[in-house]
Image: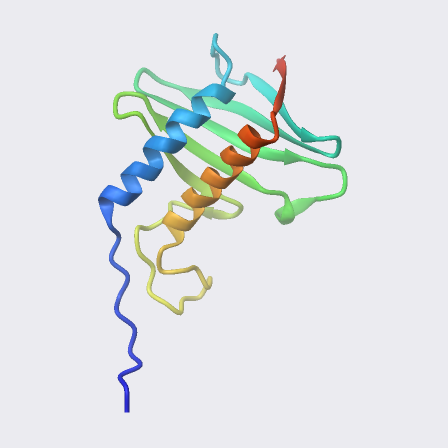
Length: 147
C-alpha cells in the first residue's frame, strides 16, 4: 500500500526572489514618474476593465501601492485588490495583501480554517505576475494621473 502522506511544502527562496524581482521590474512602468502619496492612475485593459493604481506610502527605500479593479459590475470581496510593497534597494516587489488576506505567511499548514494553500504567498505573487503580463500583452493605456 503506497504512503499517501504529503511532503510538507518548503519554499524555494531563489525562485521566490526571482519572481519578486520580475514583478518589481514590470510594476515600475505602471507608476507615475513624479510620485507623491495619494496619487492614482488608471490602466485600461479593455472597454469594460480598468484598474486603479494608487500610491499609498512613499519612503526612502520602499513604496506601497494598491491595485484595484474599477468595475460597475463587480462589488465587494469579488473585486480583485492587491497591496504591494516595492523595495527599491533590493529591487523586489512583494504582495502584502490580496483581497482580505493580510500578512501572508511563507507556509501554511493544510488544511487550515481559511483554506489557504500551503504556498499561498507564492501563489498570490504569481497572480500579480499574471496581472502585470496581462497589462503588458494588452497594450495597457495609462490615462495619466488622478489627484
